[in-house]
Length: 575
Picture 1 (tube, rainbow, N blue to C red):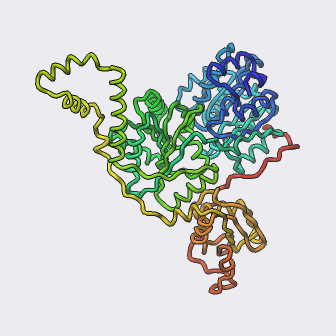
Picture 2 (cartoon, helix red, strand yellow):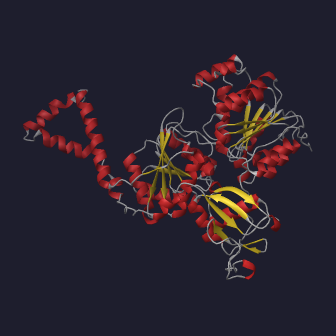
Picture 3 (cartoon, rainbow, N blue to C red):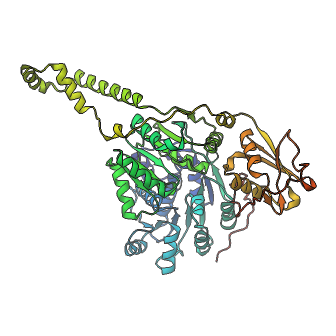
């Protein structure tokens, strides 16, 4: 569908054409008409589906029609980078409209400058913490607020902003429009929608997953000790012009940056401990090509919008499926192709990859780590092609006289050419720093992980113990380290529970959870066809004896996987 068919005014349609938008995406087709009608909306959509335009285009049009009253729209973002990126996009959308003023309100920026912007801005884009600061200072008033947008709401909750969001929404006018975009729908998100939205329209795109068909996905099974060498070999073999490497911790970002730079790779890192001016400099160097490799954590990478990222490397595998989608979505943008490369060093990481395949319904292809001989061969092939092209285009003809003079001095042309090839072939610190990695032997764990079909797991605990499926799901995830997606259908009965899982995952749960205590009950787990759970003849009352292991801490809340029924919901309460 064309943007001109979505009831957008000509000035905004002109702006979309200038940006290069051709046809509206699914989330844009679904969301734009709903927002223009002033209705509440839940958009389940991930990075790369065009959600910024889905709310940015109609909001700009509504502000344009509502005049110059300040503080009409509030957009909450989880990070400074995403807030800044959103503001840049919104400014593009409003290019041909008069007097649309925007205030960006987030940490690491001048407070006096933000106060000046807030005096006239109709649209306010910021992080919850800094928005709360201005509310406490009374430099931000919500009395004219018509629309609140929670962008990447699940990530804001993961970062601990729930109370701030609740406070902001409670102080906003009761008749406002409330819009929520989230890749997932955990229980905390459901609570917000029930309390603060009125009959929201739900727009879901690809079940909350980004389409990644144009991204080639590969994984490499390597020894833990060879991990850093494997990454260097992959970087040198594929030689991306611009790449992002993801790590799970800030410490790993720092260590990896130091190691890569010492080996001759132009690398910079970005994580939450950097000051804003440092983050700005890192991103500027990456965009301009001064540094071709960016190493980042998931949170720091939110809001990174750089064109022409050739490849994404997962040095660490993320804990959540959606994070993987966000990561690889940094490449293959705007219809281009991209590639992702993931390192796996253990059985549990192979299980994570299997879970990701199920989540995306796509194959992550196993590939071997290239060795030094392959890298050298590839470099020479590329170099040979470049020389042939230069000769065919008659480049260098101005040097013929120079070469002839060398020949007259007794040097053969082939020796001159060989010397120049040695000088220009690009040898340096990189190749000398590379080492081959050990080849992995065929692993029975891999074939078990990839085993098709389902197994049924039985636990000797049920509804009589006053537990619910979401509690049990959280317990399994915390006790085993398996991803939430690995746990299938849960059927609870009075004295036992059955769970559908992949055979390897079910066997892993049996191994890890026998002997755990839940709700003063000792858990015994068994696979279907094995001895019935709860009937171990060597135990009292048919239950296995404790192994001095107890589940510590509260299980983390699982993602909600049902449907939201919002019809007839009472109006939110304003305070």
